[in-house]
Picture (cartoon, rainbow, N blue to C red):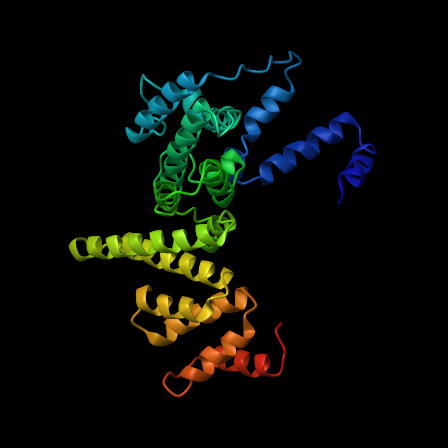
Length: 319
């Protein structure tokens, strides 16, 4: 029901009945949701009639020290185990701490000296939060959920702040480095890639991004020769998908498909084509989808769902 409807229904109940409703609803909230949205602190603070004064925004030097301290403590697991450095209250309050750091850092204009430093600190915080979505660092893996900012939104914010100063080789390399991080399981990775592409406002920026991604892939493949690790393969494939999206944005789809097949790590040709089809469909490039299918239908035994899609697309049915 809508909020107005909820208010209307609640008005029909006395305080005792409302208390029962609140208690029953509280019981039904899963523990992880209570933690991610800090429900307990919300209930405690809303009952406190003494209004808290708005916390003062920290200086860039204070923020620098805070984030270095936070990262060192997080690295030493001090937010997930009892210790004398980070007390229990601070460990439970990590969400509010991160929210404030993020908010304060974004108060600095990105084209100022302090703003450039703030962008760098936002980047450091980003890498910590992405790591913590895969390895328990705080009381919950859902770090971006606690911040109320999705990973793709955070990346777009940092990348936009960087590129506002100019699109250079060094800046683009640092933007691509944002993709060389852990990915929040609560956010489909392709959405993060789309955020990256959305920040590329000119063809020159897109071409530079492609060049940088290619260099990154080559570097990762060299690394893979020494360490056969799944995460390295995953990054290579994500970079390749991102490059394909940029090629599509440039209307250079054939070049994009050729590069995709060159760099993407997948030995099964049917699965490789399936991923290409999926991206082309997301981009509504149905003519290219059909062309790619017809070029390979004699070489590859496609799954029935792909064959069915081909028949529908040929008839102009795209749902």
